[in-house]
Length: 440
Image (cartoon, rainbow, N blue to C red; front, top):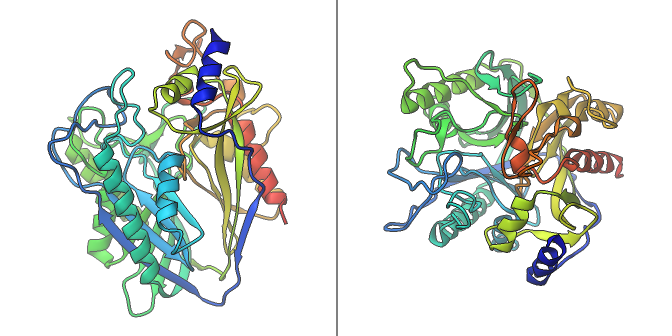
């Protein structure tokens, strides 16, 4: 049966390309230039629209605030952050193609919004594609317009980097308790214009929780609005290492979704505005990118592909399904700051340590061997391969692998495995990180 299914899938796949070599882009310049633009993603009327992140086949019941595509261009490199649950490689390709005459280096990020319209197709119910074609077109159009406008309004800038401890705003729902408590800021002071802040923080955008069925950008949108109101600076938000599952705490009792979102966004904005350790960043941008393979053992992902819900690039491989996925990752340098741009939700212990992880070391320790002391993660970038989990903490339900979660002997729920490509994804991410570091 497995072989028959694999043959059918191979027939349906458009291509089975091999991964590409490392692409290296380095900008030699004496001055930063930065531009910003943001566009609302229009919500089509009289359409069936599923909310993503929690429940299957639940339709949108209203609008709290709109999802947006926010773009920052830095020396002709476009970074687009979209308020949504996730961005597939197919959607990223559409955006890049429409911006190809503007920039050769476009990166697209998801804020991992759990109060947005389904952009991956996984929340339409069993066997039902939850994506809406009109909304997805509007999303691509908004991202492209924001990208073009941000490119066109670049101005001379100085770049400052700083961070602040967000104290007890986050929580980790799965042992070991490891996460980054800092919010990081790249602040561009632009000549004769408002500034732009690129914010990096690790927490699922789900402060509204699962009882909400209205469209919202969640705490990310609230934080952006507050910073804009208080400073006139624009904000682009990119998630950090949120796997395992890092989220913001419930801050109001009794719980009220909107009140909790508003307070979460306000607290995070206050932490950002409290940053007092900024340093001027040297004028350097380098980006090394690579397409690479990830083992595909998740039979549910195979089924989604077979039904046309997912559109990913597969190649043949020695895995449980007979295939591997092709995705991409990058290393981005601003001055002496190293950023790993990852297509999924990586468990923080893989980045910072605190757990025995087979034959790989924490990414920050590996980066230190190459002279980098400041290491950040830009997650959910250009694709979504799901959770990236330490191999020795990867537990699946043998009766229904990748379909039903399993509790370990301590009663801990191993839900994340059902949304992971395979137990070997972490090793693939590590190997690419090392290859990119070694690339001269």
